[in-house]
Image (tube, rainbow, N blue to C red; front, side, top):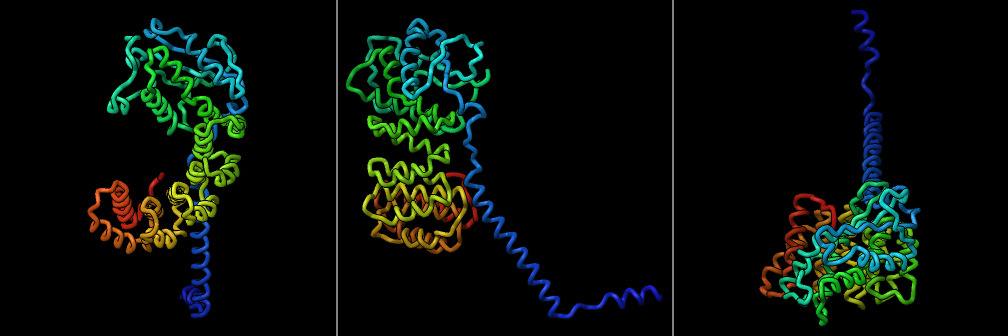
Length: 379
């Protein structure tokens, strides 16, 4: 009993003021931790999709070439393909090795054309001029891969562009007024398909990309692809280049979209562009880049601005559509009433316009995302 009495004497109740002070300090600490966690998460999320090349690859300047023809050997010799590929690699400053595959050289470009007879008509006199339905199904005549340190490596940095660029090349060939024999088609494919800059981006060879970008004779189509690659690979040295190219009307659209991959630090540049109505295509591209930032970071700081612009009927509907997507990519309940108002308005409009249809899709999707508090991975 004596010990119990002593414990009770020590267990005195704290004064109310002291108790509240402790609670306030605790809440302040919790709030600070949450804020810093959110800020840190937003910054780290910009980098969560690693685009770094494999260690050692960025220092390599010599590339070997291996061609697999299989049953297609009777249609074309591997040397024909090498002769088409080699000068294109050398144009970017690579030296090309023809040593056997067991050579100590560690980086090899593999060109697989074994399915060639299925991809290009084996009737060599037949012109390659498919219908529009066929063009949508065109596949490249050869597949590209690369081997590093005797291992086949999947393309990870530009995986969204490898196949689409090759299909676009085949479509360009199919639209040509000149008929092609299979051998001619294959050579034309490697002349037009810009696999060298795709490889340079994959391998982290930024100097080669920037060198080509700055050449006066580089076609605009190639400049646009390089800007896209600087965004896709999130190369640090590409960021100031993209910002500068916003001033070049010929390629500003690609620069704006690519900047979206660089997260919150690119936001201020794109915000100034999206509010400038002097160039519609650039304005749409900037809005798309802002949506990509919203998707990557979840940052909803610009929600009030996006809401205001989405409601502005004097603004082109394509710009408004991209900003509505952005509202869904960084869900914020502040935008819910605005999205419901837009929903009511667009469903009262029965126009078959495809732009309006995409606007409807964006509004419906963003309403669901805001209600669920969801957050997408990409834009």
